[in-house]
Amino acid sequence: MTNTSKIQILTGAIIAILLSHRNFFDMIRYVLAVRSKLGMMKAVVFAVMLRLNFMPSHSLQGVIDQNEISFFKGGYEYCQNSSIGVLFFPGALVDPIAYAPLLRLISHETNSHVVCLKLPFRNPVTFPREEAFQLLMNRNSSIKSWIIAGHSMGSGIYGAAGLVAWAKKKYGASCNIHGLVMLAGAMSGSDVNLSDDLNLESLVILGSEDTIVPPLGNSEIGTPVKASIKEKLPRQTKLVILQGANHAGFGNYGPQKFPYKDGLRTISIDEQQKLSTQHIKEMIIKIKRVKKYN
Image (tube, rainbow, N blue to C red; front, top):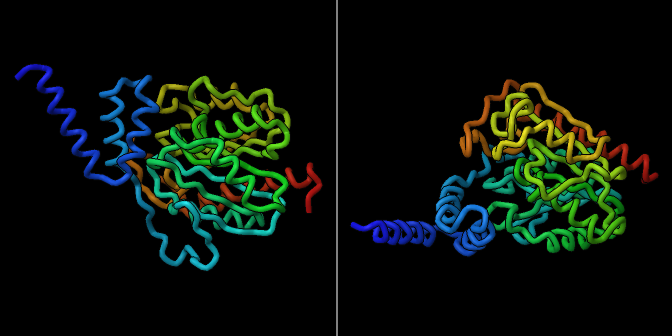
């Protein structure tokens, strides 16, 4: 069998796998978005690997009150008549509803209007930023300040941090984005730099037991986690390392085994999320005080 025949068979097998799953067109969009960096064959193989590693939500029975969640476009929101809104990017591959316990807690504890996005192919790479921006601008007329947040890949240059940089460059102060929260995220890559933004409150929360974005190690593409935060986020950024927390504990979907096996938490998932919410609450209180909101 020639190499060409082997490639044709492999390509056919990969296409068959793609067609056997839902999200086919989102997968194609993803392949087209990354093929310039990976090459077509690697992009397709990587897309298949991502789809086979989708992570569901776990242990949510009794935690989600269907009467208080509003669903739209596959995403959802906790509605509050508030001056503060939080737009949340789920981590790559994770079912968005896995973050409902955390986002419900944030909404209740901070009296904030919280919106969780649904990402195409559960990946922020192909999510249109203009759509995200218009979505948050149209949610609630009472909101005066937006905080853009995310977990893992959803927090960095393709997710929350990327949206902040894009919106501020395109719309300036009128975008009303005054906060950034990165949960288990790093500023990997060179496309986004917010270090000169003195008007952006930013918070990074990492887990001491996280082996996917280790506080003292490198991100998945080799970027030093702490160095990237220091170099590419504003100098007023607050960096918190939660002792005993891991990567998957910010959502209810673990244990996480892709792309690496996550570390084991030494605190409960409830405690990890409560501690995270407390730090987010402190940032929101600061924004309200500076902006003189009630």
